[in-house]
Amino acid sequence: MKILVVEDDLDTLQGLQMLLEESGLEVRGAATLADAHAQLAAFDPDVCLTDLQLPDGDGLDFIRAAHAENPRREIVVLTGFGTLDSAVEAMKAGAFDYLVKPLRPVQLEAVLERLRSGLPRDEGSADPWKSLDQTGRFGPIVGVSPATREMCAVIARVARSDAPVMITGESGSGKEAAAQTIHGLSRRRGKALVAINCGAVTANLIESELFGHEKGAFTGADKRRAGYFELAQGGTLFLDEVTEMPPDLQVKFLRVLETRTFRRVGGNEEIASDVRIVSSSNRDLAEAVEKKTLREDLYYRLNVLPLQVVPLRERREDVPVLAKHFVSLVAESEGGALRSFSPGALDRLAAHAWPGNVRELRNVVHRAYVLSDGASIGESTVVAVLAGRSSGVFPAVRPPVAGGVEAETAPAGSGPAETPPAEARAPGPPLSVPVRVGDSLEEVERRLLEQTLAAVGGNKKKAAEILRVSLKTIYNKIKQYELER
Ligand SMILES: Nc1ncnc2c1ncn2[C@@H]1O[C@H](COP(=O)(O)OP(=O)(O)OP(=O)(O)O)[C@@H](O)[C@H]1O
Ligand SMILES: [Mg+2]
Image (cartoon, rainbow, N blue to C red; front, side, top):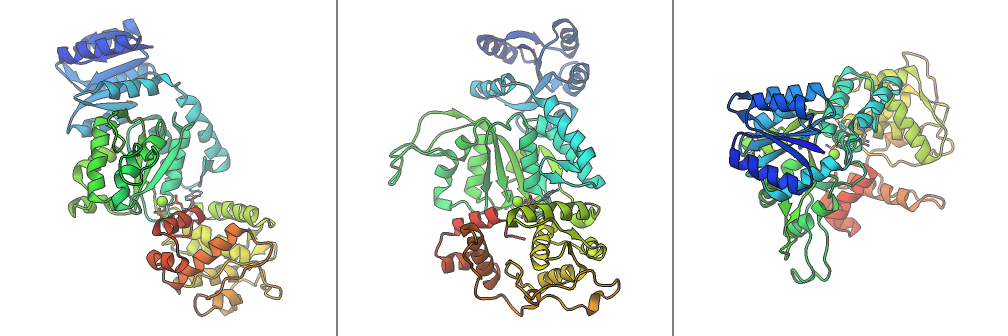
């Protein structure tokens, strides 16, 4: 691997050259932009490590040139503390990663390791692109709207980089799906994607949960245990609901992001952290910073590459394809036949405002599927299910009851006069959960949790008390069964 270092501070340049040569690389240095451009032609480096402020001009121009000449060339930016804005510009110009000065050898080693571990980026982004055009799918993302296309284009770009991504969007709009796609397209896809629900980490265990601990680090630490950072090593760490992160955790996080190293609790070894951070929030980040719930310095560190997920109501073209997609998922999980939506049903879906976004659509499709048993899902069912949502009732999802057959294909225009199916008319949350031999334990657990949450108005703490499990278990199960809307 040939590497060109562009840096006007001669001490730093020399130090870097030495370190890189020791790692067995072929290294050249340049202290000016003019020299850097000349070396680009003469040396043809695989990797450029470049400062942004150079005596004879802006490093961004060099990045653009180096990238344009050979898009497979990797560019890593050296940036001073507090000048992250320019690092963001550099990422847009084609840089792959950035390093914050003062540099630490372990940081540099981690970046080199990533560079060495193959460069699958072209192959990684070409296929999904083709598939979006042909099938309306981009990894786990389904959609045909211009907004979704635009988002997939941004995802394909950020997946190549290693810089932190901040995904914002309303609840249920698909932030986690976007994070999974980014990871799946990145060179880190062979390693883990570890998600941390920042609002649900237990306060007194934070440090050990994140960084792990050595045996005997504290009472009860009878074994060495890996933390999230170690579990995600080489992969991606997904910080879900990042504005909910407790303040002391924010400080600890910042430290790791700045030094790119961490220690296990009770340990002395400094471990190089090689994780890509993807965060998400459904809050207004500027407001969170203003109210000081999110530290400003952390915000800048995490928001290097922003990605916005548009609310479903602003991309209604996605509704029919998503509905169809969810029907096939439900049919598969319920072991039933595929069903289509009647034209009237599709109109109703298209007209709905979707405050709960894609997750709400998914739940509505699930319930509508279960409540109907013809070959198609009719308008009346959709109307009933959508109405159930506004009254706060969350009807139990159960197999269709004999005799509860719904009048399908109602004549157009008869919508409001139709009688909704019995289950959707239920006056309040039922206090029992139907269980039949033949149901899977998972399904029963899901129903029980769903109904308990409905009965306590979504209060997770109360639900945890009733079900006699920890709050964390509730969070985990809600996630597992995708219950939150
Ligand atoms: N474009 C999409 N194509 C297919 N499925 C999607 C899409 N967007 C979201 N989903 C599905 O919708 C559900 C909700 O999405 P997701 O969990 O990613 O939302 P979120 O924005 O992270 O929500 P929250 O803010 O509540 O955490 C998931 O089941 C996800 O797989
Ligand atoms: Mg989420």
